[in-house]
Length: 156
Image 1 (tube, rainbow, N blue to C red):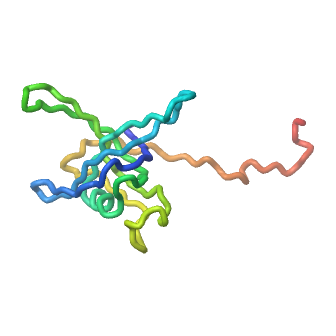
Image 2: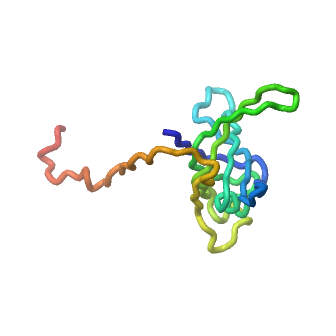
Image 3: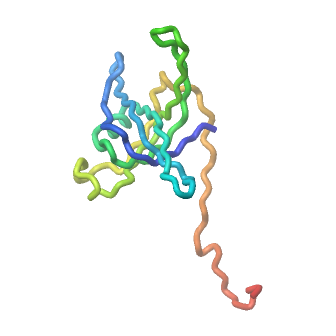
């Protein structure tokens, strides 16, 4: 299973580009804070390269800007290439399947009224490998599932 969930802040304004065949895409970096902080030290962050395609890319470029928090769901893609000096370089990116706002509407003036709260779209089929069926989702339940009706059943 290859599933990544991230919440972070854009390090720069995303820029919409188009492939030679006309598909919209954007590549940008998100700073994601690490969950563990050593005592007396500042929180560290990882800077993760994100790629979005088509309507998802258009949505991100329209509504997000540098410093804005974003929630992303996607998958890790790795690759390699040879640079102009003949050195082999390796890449790791997260390809977005779903993007959502994390900030409240009042936290940003770049969004208009009636905005979509999220946009979800898979990568273009010409770039996508065959993926297994998604795993079933499970609910955490409802508080009513745990209600006790008789105080005599309590062990204390």
